[in-house]
Image (cartoon, rainbow, N blue to C red; front, side, top):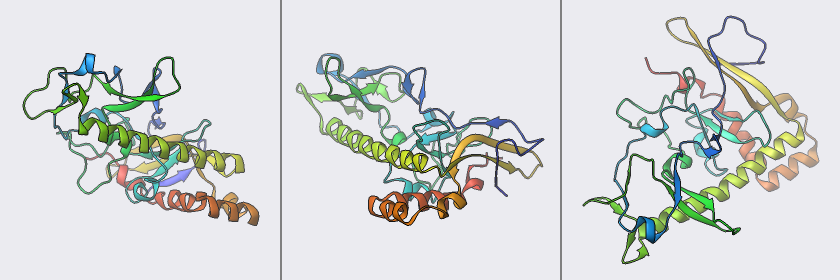
Length: 261
């Protein structure tokens, strides 16, 4: 059975891990060599139609947009990063920093929700040099990226123009970034109200071993229930309240992230 404990409250637990950072080495999680899409560089490029999620195998958490928290809570624990800003993330693995939802062949666990952060890959919005605008980029290190598209690949440009596939990908990324901003505002509201606390989850496996995830934050229900009426009503109007309840419901999903035998 999964148990939420104070970080210092357990002895003899397994290796204590922490949620993955949304960025690594200054780059967003998963991305290695993102390049702005241009017809000069990518006129012949394409994306292979590959449903493999192997690129997401070595992470234990993924950032969420605000709108998908309601869906994700039915599949994953939704927790908050330990440092401000408090970013909501879906926990997808515990023990070994491995994603329990990606199988040996790269398939996502059947029936489980795939977070938008993962579905947008290998595309991402990046700041245009010398401008405040954001433009679409592609990770050229992605296994699905082809510098020279072949038959069956999804072309990025045709006739010197971005293809519908690229335009749809750009719109998806813009919508996701909008929801990420709302998710961040949600976490900031919780942190400002003082209802977030550090916790650690310990899960005992059938073989008696314990796997742990620590250094994340969740809503403390006692503090949440002690909120003033004014704050409660303000959160109801702004949408924070519904997201908070979705987060609390997700605390029943810890067993879903147990590493497969």
